[in-house]
Length: 120
Picture 1 (cartoon, helix red, strand yellow):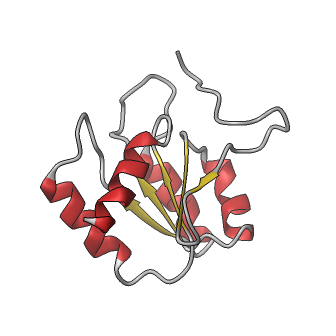
Picture 2 (cartoon, rainbow, N blue to C red; picture 1 turned 180 degrees about the vertical axis):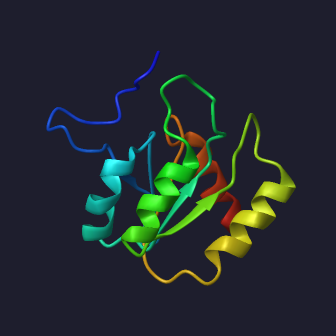
């Protein structure tokens, strides 16, 4: 199954903008972070547990790269349905952020579910 089609035919990440504050994508790579910084993202939220699939980069590797580029990295791993604890952690993490945030997981769906929880 790995790697999923994270990139369109142009070879770029397949980022889906939800609104001016949040967008989602599938698994990113450490080398993608520089482009995310250039695109203006102030934070990334990983909704994927480490070691979910072979070949998946560890969150720590993405977080180290994010730090180099001034991007806040947040890890809220979700397996299955989003829990009330994960929603609370996400709301707390998002509250101080000003600027666009990119959420990612395997497909972007769990990251999107976290963001949709803000409307509740």
